[in-house]
Length: 196
Image 1 (cartoon, rainbow, N blue to C red):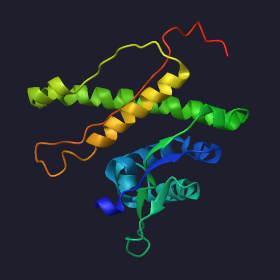
Image 2 (cartoon, rainbow, N blue to C red):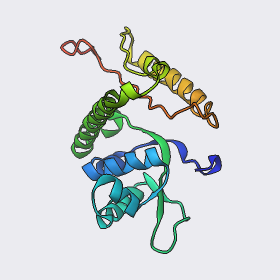
Image 3 (tube, helix red, strand yellow):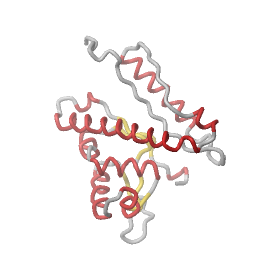
Image 4 (cartoon, rainbow, N blue to C red):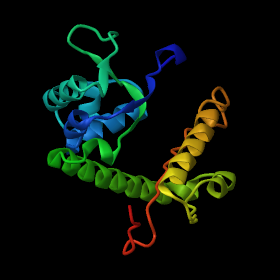
């Protein structure tokens, strides 16, 4: 997609959007669109091993809550879809008290963790064919910090700014490749929830 046609930067998901996105095929469709940029229902069906009727139906459901949009560039009935935002966020506090939304958020979070594991394993399957400089640069790193909830939010914001800064620096460089960046934070001492 040309830069002027890029989706919006971020979208804060509400309970309705979470409930729609927390579906195996819809989650995969949304993820594939975010990876591809644009696609028709037929192309997505071929990518995901389903039929175009199912993908069309679920794309319209995603559209109904603002997660995807029609680019207006399709021909006839062949609508060309794109994600409505580059990223999305959600907060448990927005869902508190809505049991269906909390369940949807729990499923979606687990689905994202599964996708992270699958994609990481796919990289490990092909890693040997990549140049050593890339193999040294990519991979998994872990560390730990001691922080308050407010400090974790600040750390996320700083990491997000770094990612935004590097988002397009390699465009036009034949040696550059798209690199997935995941930020995962969870408490280490699961048996000791903080007070308040």
